[in-house]
Image 1 (cartoon, rainbow, N blue to C red):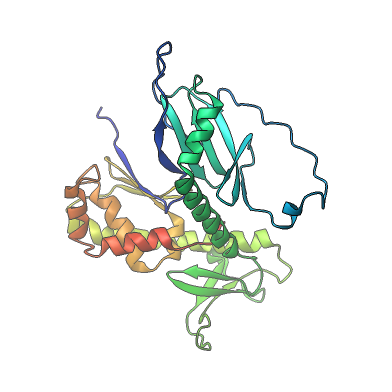
Image 2: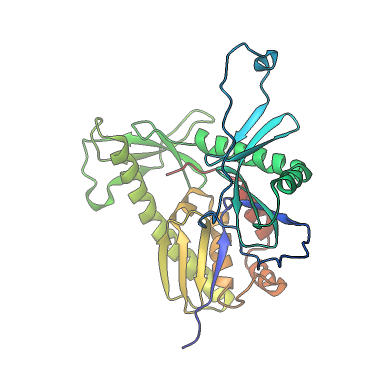
Length: 323
């Protein structure tokens, strides 16, 4: 039985950013251990305990008036002053050959071999200061955008559907049977205001979770129908056959293609404009011809989506509401 091949399309920059590792000083009496990939799922083998915090007395120092910017990891056990910023980071010991850095949603994580001294670790952090601050700023801004896009699910809430904003209307007067909701696209609105409304068969006293679940169920049904149509459209153009479509809720990828014709697509793609959806569909179907991301693969994608690079950028840059 042939080995199953799977290739993925990464979600826009949600995975922690990793800086090329800083080589650790070579030691004569210790052999470096094989490197392991840094992953937020790994459990640190050993962590250096944090120095006890000094009691804070308001007004004791003039510096209290102007505090530097602060980036604090929830599991921080060391910190460094980088420029005007205090960076409290998670430091872990791992079996690896060099000092490594990763910046994720929680902040900075620094990992190092057991034999590297803390002085050397602190020096490495200083040497990577520009990269660290850049990634922390980007992560902070990304988090701010995501939080600003968070939806309060109630009557009048707005969510993106196929690149357009849709207003939620709680409409207990109607029974929408299995559909749960009905999209009205005939409405007229002022310039800059959404013209589509989704009438959801819920009372005005419905809880936020009830409204959210009803909208999500409607979106997933629409996504399944649309994705099936687009797969059927692009598969003949690429000369491939897909076997089954599965909707995913993955947090780090938009799509997955298996060599046996199974296609997984993230239902949240339904938030994007149709050209972006088409790019992801064509991307995954192209993997049924070329099982890698070689130049030949991208040439295959370009035969059906010539502007794939621009659409790929939109996929990474656009901020969607968290669910």
